[in-house]
Image (tube, rainbow, N blue to C red; front, side, top):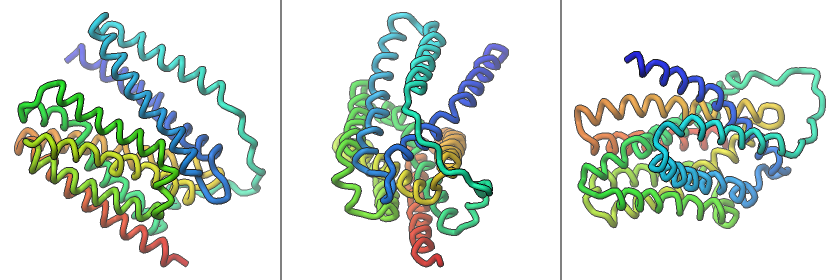
Length: 299
């Protein structure tokens, strides 16, 4: 227990230090890629795809590094990554300062009183909460079903590959639907995806198809969220909107999903987690539908 406390403390400090990076990054990217029509989906996809590529490279390289040097290399690796992040941040182009305003911007939490915005964040919460089952328990579930490590790696490779493909070509696909409709499609496909995993996990073709759905359940969902955040939080509110997205859309669902999923695995098994994820996705679909309705009925 005494050895775990320093690890928990340092992990907490690490995430506190890094928690503001993603909102600031997304806010800067949105500002640089925005025009009178909002964020350019084609250009944003070409930028966002490097996050997915970086994930593949870091996981592959760090896995090999751990096997070669052991876990003792982890602190140095994290320090190196943060140093490279600092260098990249210092080389970002300076953006033109926005016009001066006599009044401060309204508090971001105050904007959540708008029904369309409140239902929008609720839809994000439930859709991402559903995906917690995937990130935390999918590999364990697949191993329990009798698949080997190679199969687990191949399934994750499929999901990341289709994610990259969508981001790279989203300039062609994203304008076909409004951002609100993309949220509805993503939530519906998420529900079907986790029903398939829970009921048909014993069949590899079902798992491959479920992982291929990641292009819609994650990539399309994220692109729609960024487009709507740019609409709801313009100008000086952009950073606050991204912070709310990180907190309500990923931070809180991640904690609750991990805790609740762990309880379900212990008492009901892995399949129950994915059935629960499907129900969360249905709730996300309902919230997205309400958000769209309020968006088009607002004065």
